[in-house]
Length: 322
Ligand code: TYM
Image 1 (cartoon, rainbow, N blue to C red):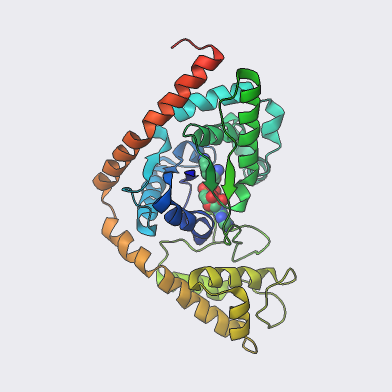
Image 2 (image 1 turned 90 degrees about the vertical axis):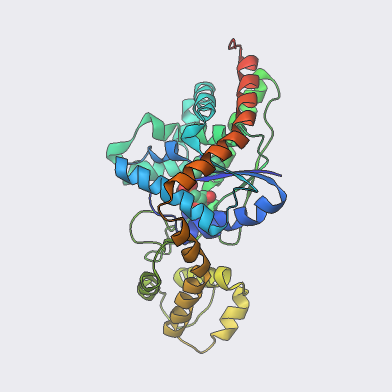
C-alpha cells in the first residue's frame, strides 16, 4: 500500500484525530511507504490569524512526532513547501464541474458555521485534497469517517481526468479504524472537532482531561451500555475501548451494576495514562523549531520527486508545454 494522510493545522489535534487517523498511521508506516502531511493551505480556508496558523502548524508536527510518526520510516511534509500540490489542484479545479464541489457535506457545514467566510478556496478545497492524494500514487488513505465524501470526490475527479486525458490515476481507498467517528463530549450527535470545548487535545494536561471527562454529557439511565439510544455512553465506551485495548463487551461487563461516576473516573485515568508517553515526548520536542524544519526538509526531499513526476505526466497529457 502507498499511504497518504493529512491534518489541517486549524486548532489543537484531539483524540478524535488520533483515534480516527494518527493511530492507524503509526502502524501503517512500519510496512508501507507513507507520507503524512500538515495541510496548511487547507487550514486557511477557514478563519485564522497569522499567529494561530504558525503555532498550530508547528504544534501539529510536534504532535505527529510525539504520537509516534517516525520520520525515518515515513515522510513528514508541510503541504505549502511542495508547490506541486497547488499546481495539480488548479488543474483539477479547472476540469471538475462546479456543481460537484457544492455537494460536499463539509463544505455545507462550514458555510453554515462561518457564513461570512465562504471563499473560492473553501469551495475548491476537495480539488486540493485530491491533488495531495493523487500526486503520490497513493492507494490507501487512513482517515476518519468524515473524510469519505472527500475520498469519493477524489475518485470522481481521477476518473474524469482519466476519461478525458487517458488512464493516469488509480482508484484510492479509505482505511477506517474503530475510532473513525469520535463524537463531541458536549454533544454526542456532533463529531469531536478542533474548535470549541468538544474534545480532548492530545496536549491537554491530566487535570484538564479529568475535568473534561467529568463534564462530558451522559444519557438518561445509569447503565454502561453501547447502543443507538445511548449516544453519549457509546462514545465514551469507544474511547475507553480504544485507549485500553479492551473490547466494548468486556468493558460493559466490568461496569455492570456500577454507575456513570465510577466509569468516567476510570476512563479519565485511562486516557491520562494512554497519553503519558505522548506528553513526555512532546515536552522533549517542545519549541525545538530547528529540529522541525530539519525534519520537514528531509520529508520534502523524500516526497517531492514523485510529486514532480506526476505533475509532469499530467501536464504532458493535457497539453501544457514543459
Ligand atoms: P481534519 O484536520 O479535519 O482531521 C484530520 C483527521 O482526523 C480525522 N477526524 C476524526 N476521526 C474520528 N473522529 C473525529 N471526531 C474526527 N475528527 C477528525 C479526520 O477524518 C482526518 O482523518 N480534509 C482533511 C485534511 C486533508 C487530508 C488530505 C486527509 C487534506 N488533504 C489528504 C487525507 C488525505 C481534514 O480536514 O482533516
